[in-house]
Length: 337
Image 1 (tube, rainbow, N blue to C red):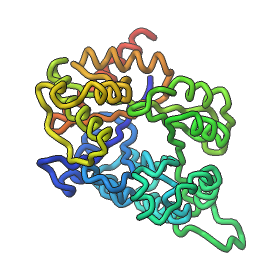
Image 2: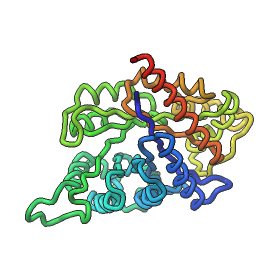
Image 3: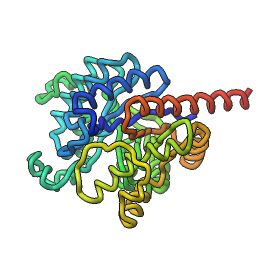
Image 4: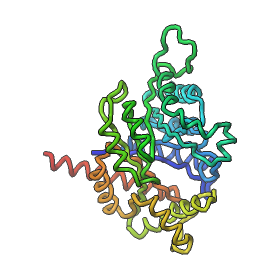
């Protein structure tokens, strides 16, 4: 049975400021822990007023402090934006504060626009050294060698587990070569999901961190008591994707009755292609959709985004998802016995 985890966007909405978004993320993680979710990740985005997780390591500390057992991490850190030693220091510190609970997912995209890349003082070519930077980062988390001149204090010896994130075949090849777990971003870039999983599994080389492939699949799930209510709630995310296509950076907006009045046919086609793996509906619809996704991909883990405007309704969505997985696990147990 595939594990379920959460990718939280730490959304700033038209009725919630950045502090509210951060506290809502912390509250969701505490609930998710009780509901049986394995991980709770946040992502590095810059120059986006609607997302409050730019200082990702600080956000992770805030969330981890409000929970006890759930793994908390980055999904991910955009490594070309940083010197590997800085990330090692940050996540080594997190590992000392919350031992056995910190994950570090790594991406090679900047997570922002070209003008902001310049503000970050990084060159677009920085992504070309991504594989080497991953290896350097991995070395900082290993036990320090005698006479080692440069250490990432206090990271040495923490062995923070690394993940490779991707939306193309590049990440699949790299994760397989380095023997690392792989998370595919099919929640916004589903086109190469199946080919990437095939590359990853067929080329995987065991490592000290991981003996066999471990594939995570991202998916948008909007769950509610009825299909109709879920489709209504999903318009918040659909508007966000339309805004991305327009180059508009806006706060999260409340759902609307008729999404067709908001986007153009072209925006709809592009957004729905990006959201084509979404599961939207009642508990029965979500259960069937999740089962189909896991059967198709053989995912070891599913990373779920539930981008709902109202915090209470978002909590309910994640609770429904957890309930469907628990029911599926019980059903599978009965069949096996």
